[in-house]
Length: 253
Length: 127
Image 1 (cartoon, helix red, strand yellow):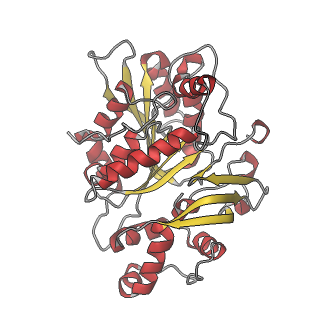
Image 2 (cartoon, each protein chain N blue to C red; image 1 turned 60 degrees about the vertical axis):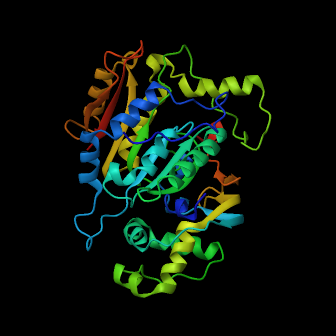
């Protein structure tokens, strides 16, 4: 069991506290099947012909626990520490928290760590170059809600020391509210995958039972025509789970 | 934000995606900081193949760093040219943009960088 990154510094009144969904991602990404898949896909064939360092992006890192885990244990998970990691979140507080969580985790795991390039504030994958992302990880706001909350005001900066109760509530709402079937944001991300993922790119997306995962996988499998994309469940929270019943879907060409 | 990220960030405005001028973004009024990181030649050797060298040369010049050679160095070049290795290490791995703006060469939109975090959220009319 690889150690879970410390997130005790994170302000949980406005940033998502790691929960069952986060831990399912950690368990799945470090599982034998996924480490084998990722290592064979991204490791160098030989020291004299280095494979270009993959770029790993977490969308919506929140506290940063998942991307910190992937960065700190890169050697184990990707078969090499020559991995670039980054993250993007709509919340400036999540960006600041993630930067701290990752640097703490890296300082405790220097021999196995990849290279952290810092968190960016933004919506899904909008500022990333086409084809630039090799591994994308997304724990979406997946809870079905009547409406999708508005994005945070563009000027909201983490420098603000005192947030109001309303601002905090809004930020927390953004971490879980997924609109219709809990899929409104996830669907936007799925649509963006063919553009942002590299040829060897792979995405890991967390879904709950209410997202209708079989339908989601079906939609992915016909993106851009039949047989272009694969989608398989590679981790589940199984029967021990609470009412949410979660799974991780791996998406690749 | 590490300078390296400028090599994979582009303007977030939808209409700019098809233009070549939206990458790389141009730093403006940049305040830089330098982290102290041990040189890792093997990491640099693995990172270079995925770097857009022309864009890196532009970024390097715009930030006031010495002009980079026209062609990217090979692994052998890097292993024998310690000065170049140190220069690339400092630029790509150690240098952070803490404050300033990132400007799109196509639409002119300016993204703010505050406290080391670049903000790509757009007002609704630009999404």
